[in-house]
Image (cartoon, rainbow, N blue to C red; front, top):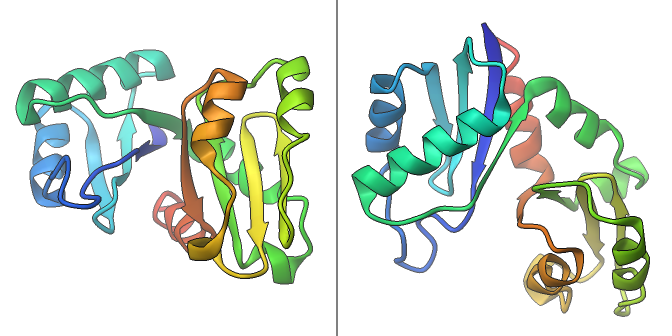
Length: 177
């Protein structure tokens, strides 16, 4: 049995795409996924499955949500091991890492696109694009950041979803059981 973490983007934000986590857990469990757990209302799910193909899992979960809730939701499925690598590869010192955001990308972007996108900078904001993650730190806090992930989705030709340090730690903990 493999352990996976699915990160759904844009659920329960600003009154849009409302999905009660209890309903999502039940839907995914009925579909054959096992030991389904959710963390907070923003679309973090840990589950187990014998399926080894992540693309199949992504397609299955997207279709289930569309059929049951009536809308499409961008999502990224990672193994626990992949999420741990993303977490451990954070280039920031521990103090910054604990206040950082991890933006997981649907694919590893083209190196030329990364180079071009990396030209965008703002004062008091640091980021680094490594493989399939953008590591972001803002000295003034995320709510005041000028950094825009939509810019990077367009420039890098990928979809993305972000989680803070605390959420990453919790997802890794939940998936370690």
